[in-house]
Image (cartoon, rainbow, N blue to C red):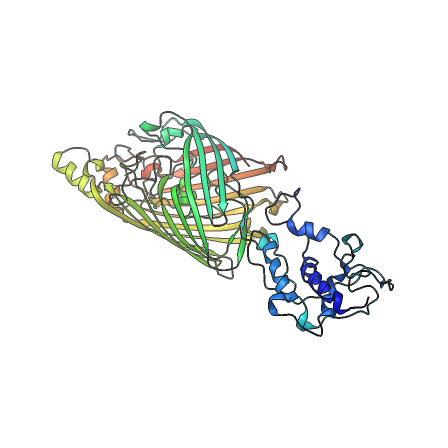
Length: 581
């Protein structure tokens, strides 16, 4: 084809428009339904005129201004890489090899053939004009290719619509054995043993209307009761139970979590996240600032551990799912209102949260003002060790209307009565503590690993929320079924020991009562436990789903229950069924 001054301008404009389009790969934007064609796939499916590359020949003698250059036109395709996010750095154009023999010379044709006559790139005639000799475009005028970002590289959720992101049902049948008990108080383990069942149902929803903003709403219902009325132990044997409370006689659905989550990216890196309870699937910034406001559970963000953090799927005992010396802010069900601020990065993170405390110990009503009562928590986590070890250091400070154990003993001595720590409650009292939590993956892509926890609090003020423990130490191991050719199975073994401060020991020995323990009198000994569980998992159906079915037994042996050497040991056998979507 002869390039004349008359058709040169038309060739130039056609090439500017069509050259970028022939470079766009046919990929579905991240998050679009598979049945709906994307913008880029629609363009890629259309035939590209053969004149698309002629611009380089026609323009060799007189370069265009920057604003009209092929490179500038190609840069406009960045909005087609998905969600309006900036495209990755561009790379030099590399002509695609032809998929067939060289095209024979063709007779002259109009400068811009109709679309029906155009040849797609990589086919005979697609690398230049018919009849023109092969030409390699000069580097100075070659339009750079902007590679499309993969779905894993695009920041944002899988969907911008409200969604049901999880459901679960957990059934636990637990039997407490008869035990030696020469005396008993109102909150002792039942000497003759006990058998109880618990059922929990949860529906978990999420909505990400923006790439940086999410909303979560969880609804749960608890039914049943713990053995011995969920009392008599500091390290209680069923972590899925709600402690007894006069205000919770009716078993009904309640709002467990209702909060907003905001994320401010601090870098270009992203990490994929799977859909889960209180986690919208998609990608998130690997380095970011984070803010959460609303009703939450503190163990969602603090004192987490891959191998010992969930009574529904891992260990059952309180001492093996959390730091029992961490008296974290919560109502009877384990939830509270507050604010969390955090810095997250691949190597380390720092979180601070302030939350509402209950009016009374193990109370359902929360104090309305954070200036009157609050639970403040700070945690530093380090994940950058070459061994894969994860270490977390936790500190907390509670301010509430708490009693004082020494004052309760002094008051009882002065009035010749039984000590009552609640009677000494005064506003503004403070309790502080620390915790250390570590986990180490050993094999099977981390499914086999070990953990250790240590916790301490000052032990002067009344135990108020979680349980009655002033020091704790626990360790254990999780073993994947890969070790015996059953990948869906899991075995866990853990040990724990809880202790009390001197003032707390004396209070119980004098017959004092708290919200978990009251034997009438006590011969102090640290409460020690061993737990072993086995879990087998099957997935059905895969689609829709997947729905995971988990079933397995659990056994616990507890010495000195309630810190009383005169009682026990106590044995607990459990069967757990857990179903989750």
